[in-house]
Image (cartoon, rainbow, N blue to C red):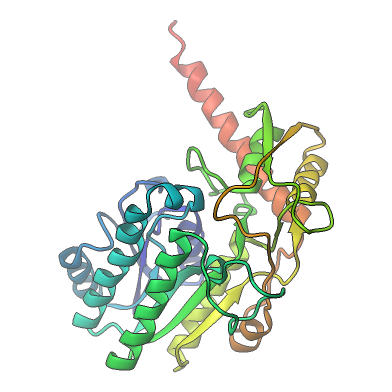
Length: 337
């Protein structure tokens, strides 16, 4: 039994591949390396550089490697970018997912795990938000993910496919051993930006909106450590192998932290202050998003290990310091003799 991981060289995908390999799974990766890194794919894991929506490539990989399940990460993930260029998000996310599902159906793959998002909820009526809450996405990013969830439901009904759709809340941190982490240039994740500021790579960090009706005026987010999220995918795979029915699950810890609290956590673990400026709210941003985690805890054999904001910030900081040291080393080597 082999697991095909699309986007397996990216941030969350690579952590999941590493977790699967450490659990003894046979894994194969398809990634176009637009935001991923081949060096993040563990040694011995076949990497096919190409598009997850290339049905000929996908079907060839499935048949050659005996793939019986798919974990689908490949896609675009920046809310603000989706507001500027919605059609690219419907192409990269929705259309790619449609082609991948078609290849899976053609090859008889009936276990599918989808990387979805809490952005499908929009601004929820109440928090913590449960999976049954209305889906009212505020951005093309959220819409593109919701469209794939709808396709999954319909494909499951028509073809007997079982799936788990994991709605991520705010993914952060890095491998606790600092082997891999978020390395994408220009990443927009709050903790990534904060640790860049803490390591002197940014002169300041901007907070978009301090006039929300929240305790300190900034947005509230439920952060989940990327390694815990990777373990959730392994647990979802086990669930499907045990005959689990299609299900949609929130992936978070059920506790919210404001943007300003998160910045303070990075300052605390870094032992360093850095400048913070304020800016107007951004279109598509959600005021408060905290997960109701009762369903995932009842459905999957999954117990978070890093449910602590300081731990998440510390792992993100350790990885950022490693990246910075590597870049500085390369720059020194490039200086002419």
